[in-house]
Length: 230
Image (cartoon, rainbow, N blue to C red; front, top):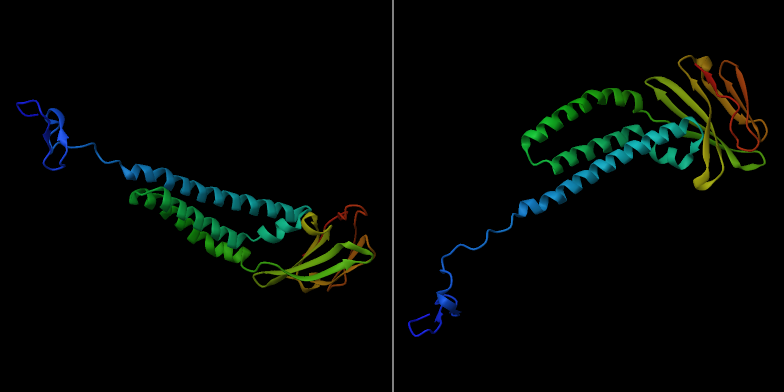
């Protein structure tokens, strides 16, 4: 404002500055810290990756338990694969660490032991789970379309293995009951045949001539016992 009381103009903005206003060179408010805004997003992503890893572990564990005691077939078929799901869990955990921590020191302290343990455990995992079982037979029960005899084959290094089970029901409600397992380390214990002996009975024979007859519950299809050879 000049001596006559009129507002002066800011030469930079061309607008009146009542009472002279603040100096043109005066510093304004500090810019917002964008890095702080990004942290919650990074942490949420890291937590989501960890939650996915925990979910995979839980599903794989549930599938392993289901395969031992009449669990849902769909759960067993989709998630009873320890080797690929173990690798997926490792990748998710590594991504969670890289996403959630920006410090190289923290990343190193977390990832070096993790990857070291994974590297040491990989030969054992390949030895145990490298040759996963594959289905070699699927036979419906006589007069029962809701009951099937299923045989899976695999190997423990050089020894052939067989697992026999019964699937009952259909669709998402189907359940799998283990019936027997056979280890061919001794050729006499190798599975020679698996067949129905009526709608509620299964007959299993080995190469050595041993015969197992297993009765099933007429209502649920649950075997009265589990057999083993080898």
